[in-house]
Image (cartoon, rainbow, N blue to C red; front, top):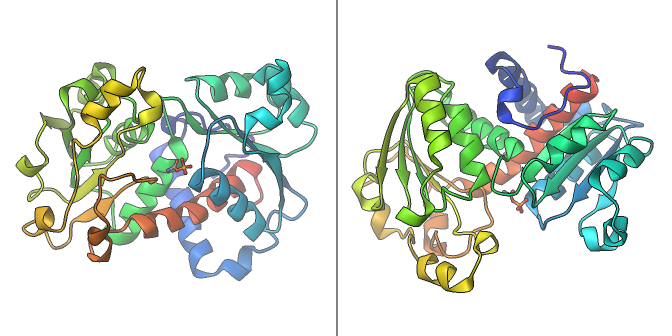
Length: 308
Ligand code: CP
């Protein structure tokens, strides 16, 4: 599988076969990490984060360090020359000379794509505004593959901020490409999944989609419950956020009749949408999910750098 030099901007940049290759290597990297500890020796990852992050930035950094490579970058654009008015296209052209691969998170939709047009090294979209988050989707799919055995014939509920939530936009687009998937979209009317995404997956992949405002309507019939945060930073005014911030709060009581093999997933960070008491339930897998993010990013970078 030759992915050397490719950018990853949208999850559809990878075929199902390429995704499978990324997951297979990620699984081996988890099983036998010593085999890969010098795989990226001499390689440098640049992390350009124009928006806050814990998991995406640090799991990428951990992934590169675990493969013997090095890292540089910024976690706060205010400490970079962006403050002086430098454009993202100039920044990436300069970083080309400093690194072998770059991951960019940006509040503006399309910014990593723009950067990739000017970059001689692979650019990975680490989340662009309310648009896409492809490496979160890789993490989510590896989690499902590891814990369900295969990605097939699953009923998946996506709950919370489906309007601005880039993780769910990328996830539904990608899961729809697998056989026998169906979706329940749970959100307040103000935060519904954009029509262009629903129409795309329905027309392209003929998937069944049900929409509801009530989590209780579907919670006992799904294989995966994917919770998301109501994202304060995406609202234009605080009043609108305050009205919606408590729309969904998952508690132990609410999942008492749910399937015993249901996976409760969340890209994290959470605010209050999953009560802490749920963490002890064996169906709650969001911390495992965050850990799988390291292996899948190791595998992704190894593929894009062409070192495997
Ligand atoms: N899931 C995710 O993207 O988390 P961070 O915002 O902490 O990177």
